[in-house]
Image 1 (cartoon, rainbow, N blue to C red):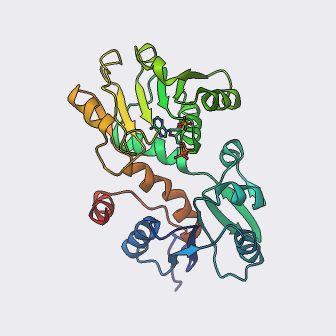
Image 2 (tube, rainbow, N blue to C red):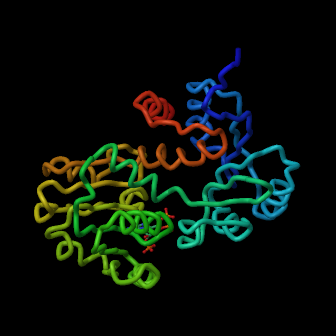
Length: 285
Ligand code: ATR
């Protein structure tokens, strides 16, 4: 007689989300949901670490003394996490920031999952979105960088990045090469004709300021309009696009999907983003 082992290799590991402040993070809810659903014994918890203490925190992690296998890193530690990691992958290197780290044979690996979270969300919520040539991205901050990287990697040939401060858009365009074109925000109506994807990565409308009336009618009829902001779920831009008959995708799915690769690294099982998880976060908002 022989006993068969479960072919799925699982681990009892412990992971964290480190930030400052970190209380508002919804990551513990997401990973807690998956741990319970998959009946795994690991843990995931918030860890508030000041900028002064962050290098020491990473040192302890690398030494194996912290008891953590890895975790998520959020504001303001993403750039430092990247530079202190032993083995950042290409995604983290191009962005210069990491949001996910894990230990493997004493080596601290790092990646940035924001971009693949963005495209995985589109794949799930707007299948077929990627057969497009041209995309328009509003904003030129850290989130925009991840979005641009991910849609370029999925074959979008022309990406117009529009920003209030056009110099920041130029910086992004210089870093990503010929597919990415910097434009002032005022050029929006000239950039929309024929575009198949519009992404808002700015906080436009969140600071109480007025949101302009957008006319999306020159975009492809099957175009997708998406916002990475998820509070509220239906932002001003999404509401306008929907009323004009376009497919819309809210930003909550990006938050959920960016968590998938980390969970798989720390706990050995690839989780899925389902409607119950989405509802759990909505109920917490
Ligand atoms: P994140 O990491 O979330 O991208 P960020 O780096 O602070 O955050 O970037 C915020 C983005 O929102 C920037 O593109 C910013 O434009 P500027 O570079 O000109 O500051 C944009 N943004 C913020 N408030 C805005 C507003 N009221 N109107 C238009 N753009 C705005």
